[in-house]
Length: 358
Image 1 (cartoon, rainbow, N blue to C red):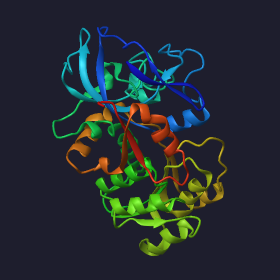
Image 2: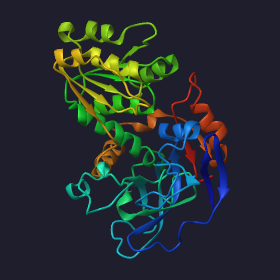
Image 3: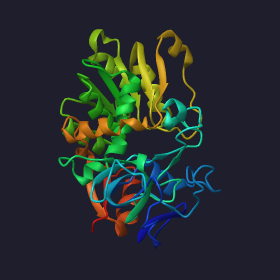
Image 4: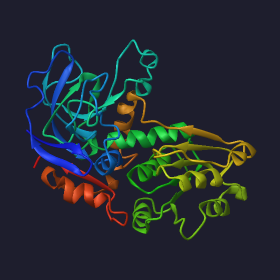
């Protein structure tokens, strides 16, 4: 099969490798991939990696490079191993890519699988990934999708789960005002998740005007802010009830200034959620954190049981995730027309999907 594999920073190769296993082991599932998204994590690996891709074999999965990339994907079940009962050949599925011990781990024993210290990820530290024609997964990694969900939408469940969890961590509820910093794919999906949760007033900040314009085209009532022109906190306060700031601010960049903007813009006793991954330590004005009596919460990935819920949100149209897709390409175009395009800071594209059916 064809597979896009990470060999080193700026060295992705379309290799021909064996199909993982045409006769899956007990509890495993072989799928034929259909669509896979290029994630910000994939971009960071390509530009600066290895970061999450193990240099030594992963302690739980044993995976090591060259690594097949891609963790936002879905496909069709080709074969199942013994004991698999939730899916059968021919079923269309979305992939929940987190891989970890199912028991005997402090967090796994409490159902908090995403917090396991032995966590691995399909497409980063597992034998398979979405940027290949086939993938071998565990039964708990696949969730059947309804007929009304498209194959493209199946590949969007994973990033949407990140956004839904961020809103959950912030306690977003009906009538809230919410600021999202970063109008990338996760940022816009977070806006959509906040609206689905009932948020009545939405703000988004980004230094890329094209992305702000795109956010406005999806959510016409969102207030767009370019921090190069306007201070996000001032804009949010000027439009919020009592001029006190927003109820929840969600940082989706992994940028020092964006997090500071969130702590500035949120009202007293508001909530700041950190979703973007910061590359280094980030100093904050902790006097303001204390003085404003605010909560700062991390939001790491998502609980694995979110998949049915997120599938319902997307398939019913309540959270139209497909609106973030701006381009579809083939696997042999992935580097030049995908990774390189998305790394352009002035780029016009948001979410690029790789079509593996062509």
